[in-house]
Image (cartoon, rainbow, N blue to C red; front, side, top):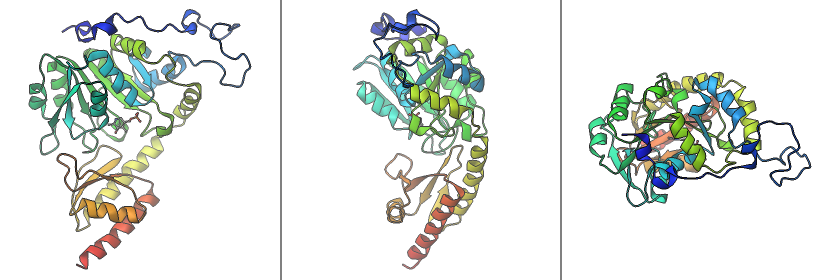
Length: 347
Ligand SMILES: *Cc1c(COP(=O)(O)O)cnc(C)c1O
């Protein structure tokens, strides 16, 4: 299958919006081309539609070429663009593991694309054969989140690669949590697999959720289509400046703290009688199966501790997803859970 055959015909022939700044390279000059205000307040000029400065920072950091990087308004922009580039509304379908990140299905629904959800195996491993079985001639996208939200585990690389090799469309590996994992992600393999798209984000380990900056990595051809379909000025000047500054402030120390806290929290949670399972985690959260998730969730809320109730999610009955906080926040959680244990033991 050639990539071009997967692209929607209207996108193949799309004439993208040409910005005034596409025609002139260089920062210095008298810019009378974009109807901006000429009075400098730091933000009076349109941003670089190609985000060249940000990409030149990210390229060595991630070990991929600038032409292989897409920068979006959160990963969600990249997810939506992939639907718009590869899926014919009302005709194409997409495949996703389940349970997983809810945005894949929302983006599918918005684009009128059928989403086929394939349950993970009971041990949360990747259902390689069932994923491939779910595909037909109209399947265009297949989403694998690794480490997976909300189960927390990363999938075996060989399992992911079997899907990438055999699925006749685009495989998206969402690595939003890869920085918290000790496993190697898929970026080093990018050039071997023309149908692979890797998503990462600055929202989690890098601490920039409020800035909305998501990254996609793929072949220059796929990135080219994403750039043509995106809004021309999708990353604003203020975001770019702050991201550039924060990328130079190392987060390694924070990552170490989160990993140590994850281990301590997992052990502490496992000691409570009402906790049945604390699943192993490669991410900055823990999934815990408890006696009564709804009851515990309400108790925590009443104590002003907010976690994510995943009770209604497939394979996650009575499970709460708990983000690893600061050492102090985690101690507070444990303290409240001790009270809960005393309370429930009374009955
Ligand atoms: C949090 C998260 C993201 C990040 O989304 P942004 O839009 O970049 O903030 C992406 N994928 C998964 C699975 C996530 O949990």
